[in-house]
Length: 404
Image: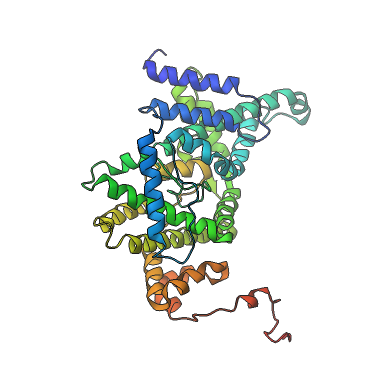
């Protein structure tokens, strides 16, 4: 019981957070989850505040990168207030989006856990009498899920570089984490300034898309939410875990919900379609960013090609952060067709120019499909112009107003 003092102290802090947190109106107490995430960051080497020199380096890199992007894309700047964040600031700034993404799955987890821990299997009369107990069990379930989310966000905070690492718009502000940049740079024989500028190019390019393609943010987040709504909880596995828990073993309690093995996607056509849309959208975003960043860095950053390959391997192979996201939302967030998407955007730019390439983002109906990623040349050589006014016509209506 009195093993590693640091682990015991961390467990006691988390337990204190759980007891002191006010009851939340939603399935998860996010104040408690943020506290646990911050404690998790501090327990793994600390989280020093961003020094003024570091902040200036990051802000200057983001501003310079944004200027370079003007030559590589027609989309206007998305960087208005560049910032440098500590890991704790990343947790605080991105929590509103995580709440939107995680609450659908968390609600299912809490409902299932409260039923399993409380009056599950009792007659209706007994369940009615156990109402207060069920409320307490639901609060306990919310605390346990909140603890797991806090641990997951703490893990992510130690790995991310900026606000757009996972391909989703987690914040409206372009920002890099000096600690994340330093961790990415470990083992690379490249000047620190080049690495910082390359990562700033990626951050600024993502924000051009998210700020100036009005439908993209809602499409990405909505697709993740739709997929998450189809996630179910493996009740049998949860009951087995709960029965096996030793309340005197803090590590077992902490690991109860870890790994994401309790979250099972429904194999429905709607679920599969949402996953395909999400993977395609992520690949198209990452492919476009890779294309414009490579173009903007050409002739300016000698190590751009090597850094680009490092980033692509990092995104394509996944890692602890991806596993963490699977625990949070129930799916792997990986742009599986990144290279095909990058090939399509490069070919489109060569064929139609920057204006023609970037105009594809004007409406979701203009975007390449999974079939287009299979054969990029077919999309590139296809109809170069598309009349957006036709999108407002009723089905079956001809351009001249007649109906079929």
